[in-house]
Image 1 (tube, helix red, strand yellow):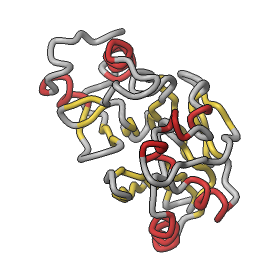
Image 2 (cartoon, helix red, strand yellow):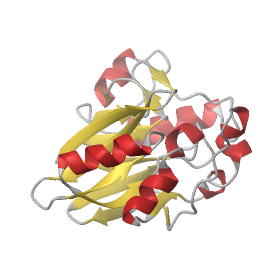
Image 3 (cartoon, helix red, strand yellow):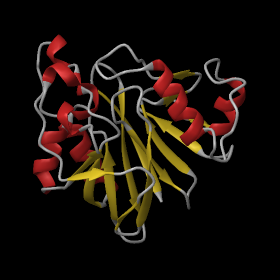
Image 4 (tube, helix red, strand yellow):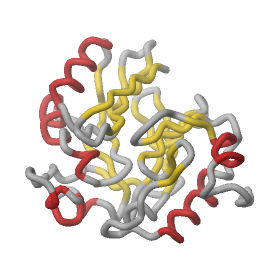
Length: 214
């Protein structure tokens, strides 16, 4: 599997391209801005996208969704309960800025712990509310990669002061869904550099001392 991280937009959001070199098919995660850059990079990488996956519905993660989706007529996946953010600039936070975002409706609402297949790629959904009301992470168990959106960052966690946010809910989500994973799982967040579960368990000031859940 191949991963390409694109840092896009004024909030320096991480949009990910994830594909299987053998099949030439893959997915696009969180197309936050600069649709032209995302489309051009997919073409340069030489794979066929089959879906767009959203970790959550904040404006900095969906700003390029409409254009990218239209370019390939791709189905859009988002967590069950998160879909209302896509069409509501107040809920997705974009109303605070110059260009309110109204994104396309999702085609599929993903459910906690379900395994979703995108050609040869298999991703398990982990429900991790707290940053938003129904945000999710996508775990490739075979490759040891977790696309964790704005749930967890290197040395930090997602903000919880926006609509639908809750600090206690976010910490609980991280404890139950992420800290239970093996230490070597690579975490690819929505902003900033990647990290691992083990590094955050032992070095993240928000998580030190939290217990692993079975």
